[in-house]
Image 1 (cartoon, one colour):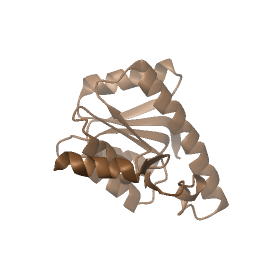
Image 2: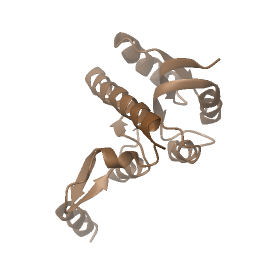
Image 3: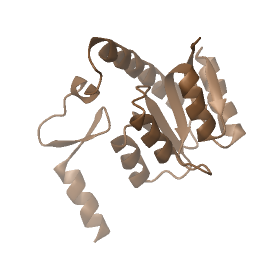
Image 4: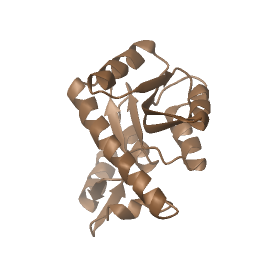
Length: 170
């Protein structure tokens, strides 16, 4: 029988898992945690989650590799990525890889509470879209404005920002 929890937490540091768990519990969410991405993948086979929060930098498998496997398996659970190595490149890669949010460490109660609420809303949308169609084109629910480039599910970047980033590197 498939049990349902609100949030799956994946991080190789117990102190981070405990912090995320405390904030989730404060917001009345149920959680399950794993210190290894492989364990989290096996949990995803036997348990249903509304949201996944994963670290990027972990031994054996990083968060990007984990997200790639989640996408390959067509698991429609929204993913939030967090890291202590918060760079613009990591944020852009996380969003372009399918994460719905990127939260740098250290995070605050307000930051995680906000991203949890947004993630739960995405979970409801994913469930609704999956029940109405094949669920393959979830990006169509939030159209990208003209002259912008999609960055994740709900963010966009205009050409000026891209040109500015290129000029910074020169």
